[in-house]
Image 1 (cartoon, helix red, strand yellow):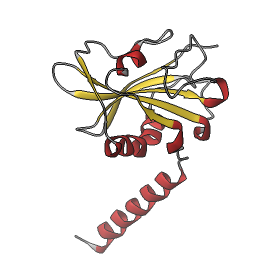
Image 2: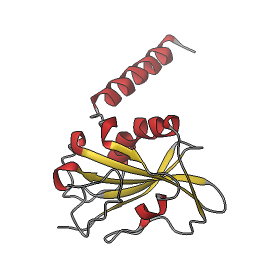
Image 3: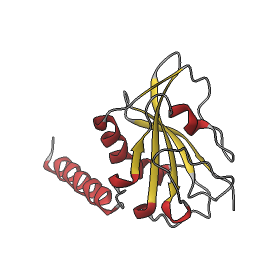
Image 4: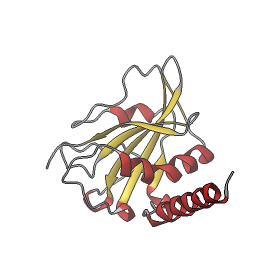
Length: 157
């Protein structure tokens, strides 16, 4: 490799690190894992579809949730979100996680919402808001590939 190529590679690594550091972090205290017996409750939503063809549930472990949370902000910044969801205040973003399985693989469903609009027992009961705007969304995470898919945002309030 030439020194020019090495310099470019070094620049890209530094630039990528700075961009990742500039993204806001989510608050780990605002996440809760639903046990496998309650995970299906998260898929019953009013303004968006949940995962289809679910055949079973399971309980994600803390390592899987930590990996999910590490990539959520980056994945969300790349998601095809509504135009009116320009400002993302992740400090109030709460998440409910549920392990779901189909005939092929396991996924973790993310039910996300802003704490500014939620009261009650969100750590024990699935939050379902009709409309509510794009600050309420769902997504699927595949822990085997560490990838997100199927971001769905609620309707306009």
